[in-house]
Image (cartoon, rainbow, N blue to C red; front, top):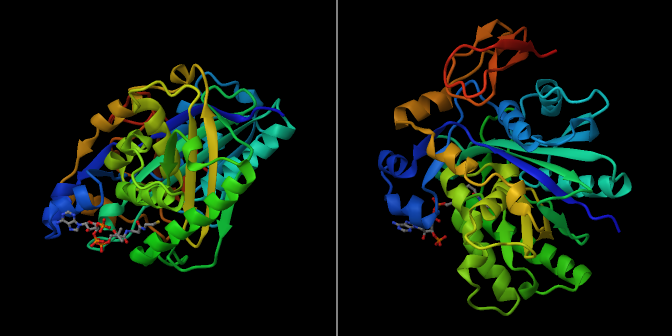
Length: 402
Ligand code: COA
């Protein structure tokens, strides 16, 4: 059987953050609730000239370093905070990254699990066509609204994976456990900018979906809880992974699972917050890039949960040489070099609205990555590519979206 897996990964987070102790004080909450209770220290906040397209393009630019672009056959863009009901965010990225015209590009949606649906489809496709590669982008901005229970569990970020028959980082196992049930734990009608959520209920459904998808995975693979050395979970907030891991251990008869099984996977999320489709894979990057021990040959169990709901449990083996495939230290630099926002500045970014009347609009320039939203004209989004390492200087050239 062809070995299929992750050849490269790229991560992008906005250049601004809110310190959750500042947010707790502004909201009259005990900071320990956010930091210890939810496990969040900071949350990423995109400025008005960033969206899922620019974050996704930045992550994909990283993932494509050293990859033969002519072999990228398909670009799947998973998001639940897309910018258009019809045109896929993938098409804008295809343009910005100058991908081959034969590369199919489309968007996938099922809440936070869309990226995992893309990964499962990509592995099947690559197994059939081992000469081709698939680029998956997961990019999201988590919004629950100002002064809501969900506010401290917001965040933003993007992850890109190149899936191929030449994996350098993780080889995926062929067994997948899945679970689908029609529930209303989290959803966002077309007319709302913020998600509606029954938070406590969503935690219950998450754990039920974990049980059910694990059962199918275990039955199909014959593997036990002990056969996974590390675990990565979907991370709506960091402490959710602790709850999930304790739950999975318990249903497998293990009372005290070692904390190190999940610890390294939580480090980035604690600083970024929820990034919906990207969060599980940011957790995987965190594990691979920050673990103090050599993970070569270790099996990682991964649980993806998308409210609504669909979930999947799957696994992969960390490959020899993986440490050269991941960019150790780069994400930590990115997280370290962000600018702290005051709560007033965060609220101004949050409440910023683009015009909806088709008028020409030039977006104010903030700190972004290589790509930014330059503005709007006649209801068309205008993206631009900027000089590398630009902070807040002038754009180099504009790319008009069609
Ligand atoms: N010091 C330390 N911990 C504290 C604390 C304090 N002063 N005050 C509260 N906590 C703890 C609580 O005990 C709780 O931990 P526990 O779950 O282990 O008991 C945690 O902090 C959260 O407190 P809680 O009262 O449950 O928070 P909340 O009612 O504001 O809601 C969520 C929390 C996660 C439900 C809410 O943020 C939300 O809806 N988020 C979005 C949806 C989501 O993330 N869903 C997850 C599945 S996808």
